[in-house]
Amino acid sequence: MKCPLGHQSSDATTSAGSEPENANFRPLEDSIHTNFNDDMSYGDYLKLEKVLSAQQPLSSEHDEMLFIVIHQASELWLKLAGHELSCAVENIKSGDFGHAFKVISRVKQILNQLTQSWAILATLTPVDYLKFRDALGHSSGFQSYGYRKIEFLLGNKNADLLAVHQSNPAVHQELSDILNAPSLYDVSLQALKQKGLLSDEAVLARDVSQPYQMQQSVLDAWIKVYQDADSHFELYELAEKLVDIEDSFQQWRFKHMYTVQRIIGNKSGTGGSSGVAFLKKSLDISFFPELFELRTHL
Image (cartoon, rainbow, N blue to C red):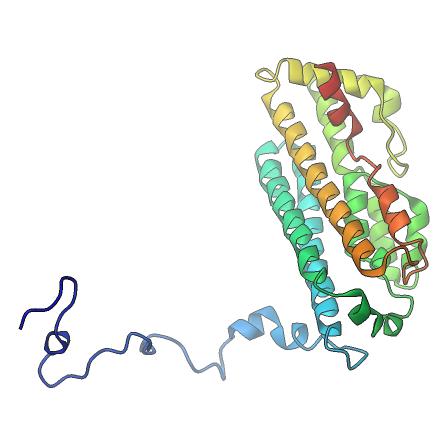
């Protein structure tokens, strides 16, 4: 019998003596490993038993699980960002700009991912958050070791912030080491020196544990890079990668502030800060001020 265009009769879909295939069933292939009694599984490799048992709400409220998962996932992304930025610092020190560009681009995407996560947390309503907020005690994202590490690596140095981590000697020591080591921007300025574009010893020999302030000599050096980008392409590309990082970081900061404002208004933070007012101040902090200022002078 003839069938409408694009269709076949049921007789044509099967061969003699066979059952029709079920499009909604995927048989297990013989080559797939199923016995992991003596072999490492996916869960073993990722330590999923530890990771997935770490969500321990302190209340019986449904939405506390959302709060925990968002923050734990964020800490994992922050850990990766810190890992990549540490690598970028070493890459630039050794002149390996190619790999530095790769990992800096990865950090940009990590920050974008973190920014998107605030949209999920924003589904937490003020009423539902207040149901378990008291259970948090004084714990706060301000105490995030991963966040502090990124800020120090990017150059936002503040020794006073180490006090928050003094209860954990190992974390305190690592952050102290990063505080006293050159930041991503410090090694970028050394790269300007190596290319003969920056000779201001007061800048190059500054105390790297102190917050960075914009310097005219650094601005002049970056302007030279941008005015002859073809001759200084690696430095030009490095500058644009740094701008990418600050752009993404500031978007994350802003979305954090706005999400907090949406959920708790102008209440104080659980860690004792002024909350939204404190978060707004961070939006005025630039890691690489000359790279934004130079655009006015081109």
